[in-house]
Every structure is written in structure tokens, then in C-alpha cells.
Length: 347
Ligand code: FNR
Image 1 (cartoon, rainbow, N blue to C red):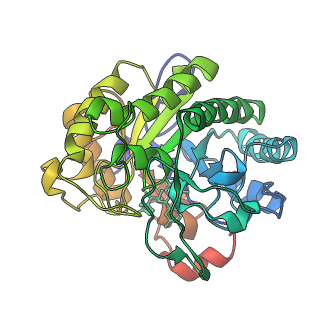
Image 2: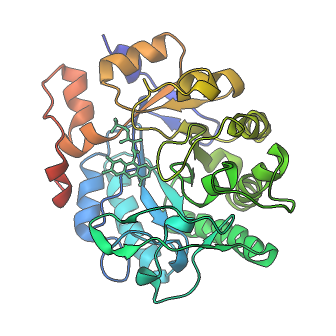
């Protein structure tokens, strides 16, 4: 029933996956105090090396990108070396792994980086507090200056180069889930009046500059992007956001990326202003390799691929509960159900 998941998929001349199951990026907050990946993280990823491609947990590109405790980084030599232990372990077991590059923007908190500005597209705060740290109330961010934007783009490109130095097979730029890049792409968080705001082209500019800088540094064949055209997390939706993504996605299609990945927890959720689900909208405007995700089982994901709704399937929570997810699906064995309590340990 799921046999179409077990055939290889060629992204490009650089990269062919052994199967069509991706491990979705999953933040685990288990790096050490210097945001260096640990041996336990290397073991955790290595146990999942039979995924066609692992996408790492979101990894911050610089200190002010941090919004949660103990999320790993890719900006110090120790962090790069720590990731090399992870990528070596995955490669030794025949796997492939991309780094997900992250800056949380207005979802950052100075608690994690010893003070300083929280940067976003505009001075529009997100409501609430850091999860499980109620004393840390989200602050009103500073609208990034043109100088700040230039530096952010440069720092994304440097982090991509660091990822390659750390042994990753490529990077997925985290443009989804209401974090920094997404904050430029939605009207809720982008109220700018300069060349980064108001029109679809302007609101897409930061995302495209980050993509282009990374492609220039490591090549489009090793670069992917995750986007959330439907706002659902850390963000309020606005029907005008549709125009932004209608502009952005064909622009991305010109750039020959490895893949585009939807960012959503449940892909049965419909967005009025997108005329349907995240995957159906992305398929309608983006003609290249698309990864679907969001509450799929191997069976429903396999059926969606057979129906040409997307090309590859990313699996999140079931991979937390089942390190041997791929093997179990291949054999038709029963899966352990996911529970939030599993987040306290790296099994
Ligand atoms: C996530 N998700 C997520 N997404 C992302 O782009 N970067 C990340 O670091 C994380 N971290 C994360 C942690 C945890 C504990 C969960 C449950 C989810 C979202 C994830 O990649 C995926 O889109 C969703 O989990 C939906 O897929 P499943 O779990 O229904 O297969």
C-alpha cells in the first residue's frame, strides 16, 4: 500500500534520496549550554538515518535568533564541530541530513542572548510568553533597519556555509511558522513602508535575498525552503497575504532549489484566502519538487503522492515516537503512538 514511498527520488545531479520519507524538522531543546549538539543528539539522528532525508531541528544562525532554551546553533566553531559528529553518525549509517536554518525574529527573547534588540520586519509584538517560561513575555521588536537586513542576509549565508563545513548535505531555510522570514511575508507582522513592505514584491524581497545569498554560497542544488502561506502559528492571517505568496512562489520556482516544503501541523486545514490546504495551494503555484507534511500517516501520505498532491512526504511526531519509523512502515508493523511526554527524552 505504501510502496511508492520506497522508490528513490532524484532532486538533481548532486542529490538522490533512497526513499521518499523525510524526517521533518523537530525542535528538541537538547543542545548544551553553548548551543552545541551533544552525542545524545548524534545518536538520536543516527537511529533515524534510514529516512530518505533528515531535516535537522531548527538551528539558529546567530545569538539574537534564539527564542527557546537549548536550541542548537551554527555560528561558533564548537557548534560546527558538534554538528560534524551528528552528520558523520548519520552518514556512517548511509543517511542524508540537511540543516534547518532559523532566526525567530520577534519570537526571540533577550533572556537567551544577554540583552540587546529583538529584530523583526516591524515593531509589532507577538502576544504571550516563551513556552514553559511564563516570566519571559514577548517584547515589542525593533523594525530591522536596512543595515540590519543586510547583516541578516550575510549571516544566513555564513550559517549555510557553516552547515556545509559541519558536514550537512544541504540546508532548509526556515521561512515558515511565524519566524523572521515569515514575519516579512505576512501583513500581520510587516507594516513597513520602504522597499521591504506593502507590495507583494517588496514583502518577498527579504526571503528572496536570503535564498539568493545562500544559493550563491552553497548552490541551489543543496538549498531548500519551508514556507507557511497560511498563517497558523505566532501569526494572524490576512487575506492580502495571498498576493505575497502568489508573487514569491513563481519567483522561487525560477531558482532551481532542491525542494519547497510546506510548514503546517495539519494539512487537512483549509485556508479561505488560499482556496484550500497548504499543499493544494503550493501545488497550484509552484511547479517543482514539493514536500507535503502535517498529520499524515504513511498510508495517507502515500495516497497523496499517488494522487500527485506532492512529491515527498515529511513525517514529524511519529518519528519522535518511532526511531525505526521507516523500517516499521516498510514491514507494515504497528507504530508507537506519539505523546507530548516523549519530548523530555531523546529516544
Ligand atoms: C515541530 N515542527 C517544527 N517545524 C519546523 O519547521 N522546525 C522545527 O524546529 C519544528 N519543531 C517542532 C517540534 C515539535 C515537538 C513538533 C511536534 C513540531 C513542525 C514539524 O516539522 C511538522 O510540520 C509537524 O509536526 C506536522 O507533522 P506531523 O508531526 O503531523 O507529521
